[in-house]
Length: 227
Image 1 (cartoon, rainbow, N blue to C red):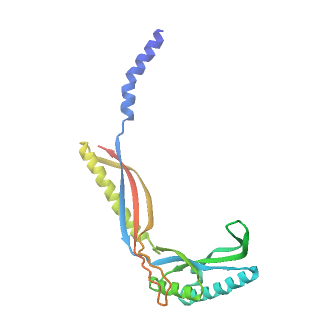
Image 2 (image 1 turned 135 degrees about the horizontal axis):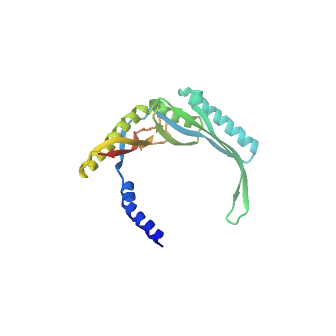
Image 3 (image 1 turned 180 degrees about the horizontal axis):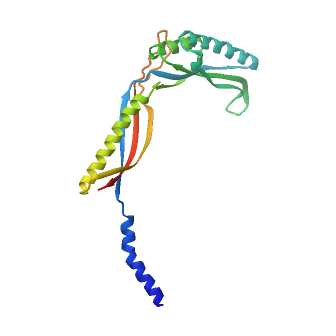
């Protein structure tokens, strides 16, 4: 019993030191930086979606149309390396009456490619040419930066400055000073469509398309010691 009492007394004496040792001795903050820029390339998915009662004819119609579409896209200045197939689908479909009976059987062929356009001034004309050549499925337009690193560096600098300013304010309010930077981490940085302002319609003239603005955001987390 006496040994137990001595142990409890020793534990009670060490407890305040243990709690004090676990108290935070630093400050952790987060910061954010956002910069805006104009996109310099676009990506669009386009192609053909054809049906016919005869499977071979459905394939033939789709192949002819897609060959013409690809030729129009290339003539609009798009390089082969910037054309990639995303969907090639051939399926049998049954069309039914309200009663549930099969009224017609058709075969559907979808052939879609993702086109990267590096000259935004030529985007509208390319879309119009593809449509005139037979593309009846156009969508998924997105805008991007070919090299976002410059904007990322600017956003990163703003994020670190924002975080440090917060840390300095917190330390000052607590009557302390910032010490050594103990840890830093970053997340974010991908370009985000801010306002595409996209208009899309098939016409004789070039399709009106606006790339809008892209934002690049970087977030950081800093942890400082306090003095």
